Length: 186
Image 1 (cartoon, one colour):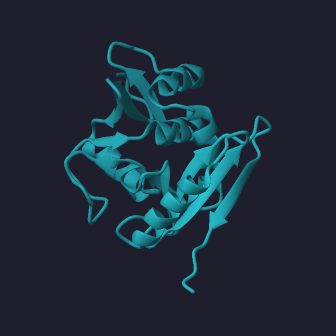
Image 2 (image 1 turned 180 degrees about the vertical axis):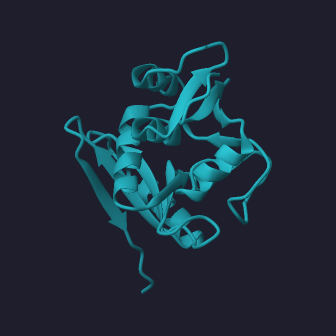
């Protein structure tokens, strides 16, 4: 990979890896982007391991001009369109979910994968290790039907981990809407 002022990342199978530990530390310190491989909950942004970015983070950082993304065999960085094509193969509804990711980042939130909470994203005000995530966000199509059972299931999960459950929709016109559910005790 050629040297540039941008940080290099590489798609390896279904991951986006920043091999240079110093670069990974830099990304983590500038918005909690990525996560060092083999460290579940980093205590600081100074680590000596490669980092893994989500495809959402990779696209966001590519659009900001912070990183360049390569495939394993490429000599030139991927264009945005190609990265999206690859990400669409890895994540169902990637483009719709990315709209929500981008909107939350623009609002100043730190957005991390929400898989451990059974959602698309976990959203922090300050960042993991500094505060607990406020919301868990599930992205749906505007036309999706959501059953009462699904809402109750999501609500029970969110309350058990002390989070607010949010459904988010994104339209073709890039407008994002949020529906926040709060459960109160009688």
